[in-house]
Length: 608
Image 1 (cartoon, rainbow, N blue to C red):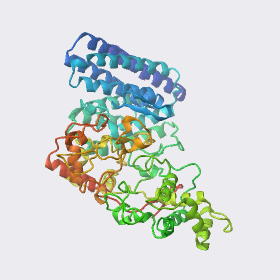
Image 2 (tube, helix red, strand yellow):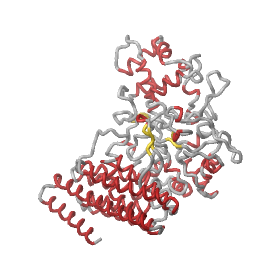
Image 3 (cartoon, rainbow, N blue to C red):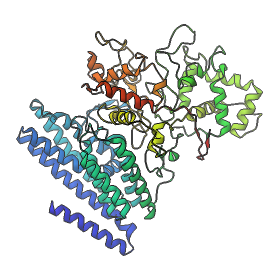
Image 4 (spheres, rainbow, N blue to C red):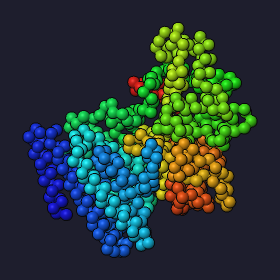
């Protein structure tokens, strides 16, 4: 321990010397790299100790302690490992579920700390051989991390970017228990992560306000280590968010570049997850799309409500996505084109649909334009086609004039299919609602939540485990901190609200697209924003109330009502929520209600 502290002290002293010599930009990155490698070596040594222990003993406490020590070290370098080597980082500390590589037609088994955690909390002697194999694989993957580190190009800008992204990861995943779902070590590990951030930051600056904010955040974690009772709301609002602002200010003071136009949903100037002015709602638009000007949005809105979109000229998008119902229709399954039957799934809300990497509940469409084309062509939905709709549009002089103004071209040219798709998709992308009471409270705009609602948030992100799938701040399956992938989950939704003779709903979900067993009954994780307005719930509308939904999750999903699914990704253990806790969860979800349309324009202009 003394040697490690001495090594770090030497690094920090060297950093200050280089800074005084006017060589800050050149050498701080090198010192950061050396500190990173130092911790990889410590991680390797710690993993090798764990390797020896699991081979030589069945002492549960000894095995668990060796595991804790290793992962606490990993947490100190997690932001850099995830930033430079995300694939290797996943093999070291990724989710304990298989991963499908669709284009290679193979399924990769899980590896790393999370798999090991499930084997040792509690320790299962009968799985000792698998445990040994997993620890051996962990050692190999750490060696690979060290090897690949040699080819990483460390720069000050990239390092600070990684450190600040770690605050996003910690807020949305770390303290929610995403990577410690069994041992509940998340709070202690968050403290270790902040300690690591402090060590790297100290190479650059000892700015008093920043150091104090880091120390106070670490102290709060250390003084409140219990996973279930930890006040996440207070920690995020009063520690992590201000810390993000302090780190951004320090980076600017050091003249370290902040990436301005990187390809992200949150621009690098965002100090925390509720810094929405640096959010890019057009992130998931295709390259061929155009900027959402007011003229284009008004045109898209007109198309949304135009009954000409239906093959019978009497059906439009609002037929299944009504604004008064948060752009759902209030039905278990939407009414079919013939007006008598019903389609196979529930209509999801369109609010914040722009913050999804894929569209439809099975994720079969990538872009909004793809979704529009699919819905128009579906015989039981719109029973039309893009071609047919564009013919109708071109027959309207008024529409042709609107399109010409929206796209800045001559009115004598016919409207193209791409222009139609762009216009309607632009309106859908504009349906952004991130100004609920919860959001305003988190941004420091007033004390707008009740104690019960705050308690509900802490449950959502803690004991109830909702936040490990419905990721903050969008509360859908868009995975932090890069927000480029939308997760789907297997929870085992029943066909009927029957908890005694429950049977699985026969909709296979994502499996229809990709025939991997892990995708059977898998559906995209939908948002819980505006959930107070979007009943009934689930892909088949089986539950009429949030009380029923919470009861289903509280039991452990399908496993809790007697449906056995080998590929269930939802933890099967009951949550043991009390009646008061269930009530608080619902109160929090109601605080996410917001249906005031705000259209974000690419120039950052906001149109109400």
